[in-house]
Every structure is written in structure tokens, then in C-alpha cells.
Image (cartoon, rainbow, N blue to C red; front, side, top):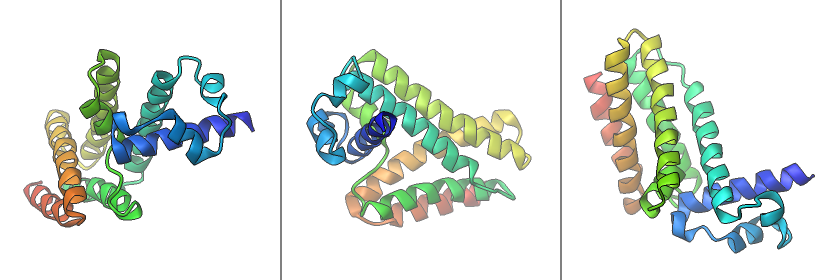
Length: 181
């Protein structure tokens, strides 16, 4: 039971950061969303909000790695489309309210620890995508370049899509990148 409360708090923090950015993630809102008692934050996260954010970033890494692992590419264009499809599903499922929690941490953070954790999270996605590109025959050095471009392009497309409340930017950028692969 205790672990379930902790997990629910991590997921609530992750979603709040994805929706509102780092500054919009208040522990009182995490408690409200989970129904957890007031003392739960320091019980499960002795360092408070900082530790909760760190756990949310770790959750984001695991979640995205799992999503990328579900992509079954036959060629490089499938990697591109599969990655953009993850973001399309997120945007549609949240009615364009949630974007990337890691971007929310990086944009809202000045703390070197949080920026470093954001860099690790983005690197994890890039590494997972490198593996997919390599699996379909793209040389590793080129796969790393394509993966970095893919993550950067998707982050920008997610911002545009949220602002426009439309998957149009995702579709257009995915089409462009898939056609160059």
C-alpha cells in the first residue's frame, strides 16, 4: 500500500510537470490529485519536493524508454514515425494539456542538479532511438545524429502542437524527417 501511494505521487508530479512545468508542480497539488495524507511527501520523499521531482524525472526516463522499446521499425522512417506517434498519443490523451515533463524541468530549472538530470533523461531517449536506428541498418554515428535531431524536433513540435491544440505540427515534422531518412 505504501509503495502504491509513493508511485501515485511520482506519477502525479510527473503529469503536473508535463502540464504546468516545474514551477507549476506544487506538492499540495500532488497530494490533492492522489488523495494522499499531508505527511506523505516527507514520509516517501525525505528531501521533499526536490526528491519528488527527481523521482518524476526517473519515472519519465523509464516510461519513455518503455514506449520507444515498443516501436517495431522496418526502416529509419518507422523510427521517426514511431517516436512522433508517442507524442501524438500523449497530446491527444491529455487534450493537449501535457507535453514533455523533462522539458518542463529544464525550462523551469536553474538548479544544476535538475539540468543534469534533464540531460540524462534526454540522453536516455537518444540512446534508445540510436538502438532502433542501428537495428534497421543505420551506422551508429549517423544513428546518434538522427536520434538527437529527432528528439530536438519532437520537443519543438510538441510545443507547437500544444500551442495550436493540433497534431498538425507533429505530422508535418514527422513527414519531413521520415522523408529524409
